[in-house]
Length: 121
Image 1: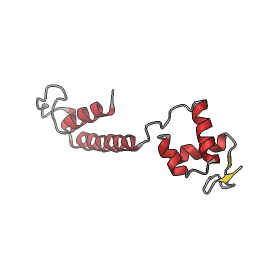
Image 2: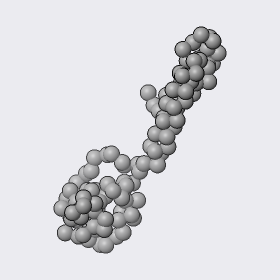
Image 3: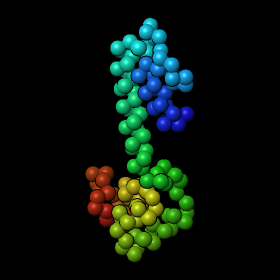
Image 4: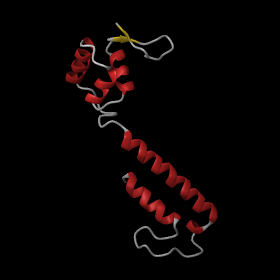
């Protein structure tokens, strides 16, 4: 089930209507109790927030790295291209680019565990 479909179903239930028919739920329906309506609205807010986070994620977030992409980001590092520009080019987050370069041994992480600012290895 896609998140949009889940949002629509929970929104309908929170509004006291059947998700598919649009008919009003019976007054005695568990979905019409104040506690259930509050819970449904909390769930709805969480799903909407998750949907917004997903919309903001870079297109390639979570996707596997190819050998070609590894080679590209290494070359871009050698060329001194700004890390933010590299992230935008590859549709990945800045953190993903930095983590990948650390994994490839191209930059060294700080002792604190952070790679800001990265030290080129």
